[in-house]
Image 1 (cartoon, rainbow, N blue to C red):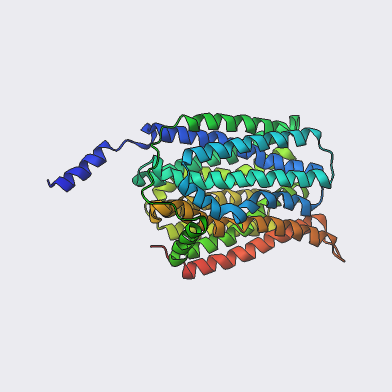
Image 2: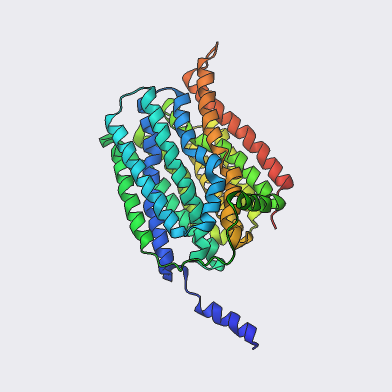
Length: 423
């Protein structure tokens, strides 16, 4: 056996399993805590907005405010991620989120219905979203420093599984039960969970990154990341396709609370249960998705995710029976999670490590930035449809965004099938 082959064999024998990796276990537990809190607050923010106003435009504005930072700050966040210790960034972002959660708790306890409290809620959501931009971009960039490249699909599958289980399976119905006791409870519990996550992240033992080359000025660093993405045609196309889907996807989610109330007639607990439908499919995908991805290309997984979303939007637009909507929401969750695992792992493996933070943020600027405008547009669509010269009925106005989502989703799926090729 040659020395090179011996080295490879020795590396394979000495590589520890994912769950023997203490740093990964701590990162996973921290993610579980933050995602459970995010699941609580996703329902609580939407429900609190409907308690403070019945104007779909203002309700959409709250959702817009939380996602707008992806458009405004994703690019500089990537430069910061490449320059500052990842663990410190995650801890700092979570500390900011603790403060905002406590502010939302105070608002929930003291605010009366009206435009002013809704605008204050939108401002707090904007700051919360800004912290999430920095944390999420850093967390994705951090993962390759914690696990081996050969374990990325397994690690990403595990991280997405905790997001689905804690953030979308347990969190939403639990939030519905807590709201029945007090609308403020989910915000207080989220603050506590974030504090636990901070302690877990502090406990990680990650060697400090060594800077081998001098930092470029901010604008030059931004340009370097954007140019790398722009010259990589497959990744660039994927970013724009993802941007289109996040535009309609976040709009879809922003007004789902109104669909649940006005079309399905659900209360807070029922809305929480409804949100877990997609989480059921997503959780299944995190468990078996990495094995599926060994046998299909990332492009195939992405196309399945696009098709699943489009069919689910069409089912809502057609007011299909609840049992059929439930099936399509589960399928959408499964195919969408397969898409996420595939494209995140592809980026982490494909982008050079020194550029990962900047290129990742440039990708998410294009891919996630449009989400804020989707939330705003879909809220405006319902408001417009219900207040025109010949206003639509309450339920019919809520259906319009889902017709739009299905049409745009179908068009993007056809484009991707014809033009998207990943190396």
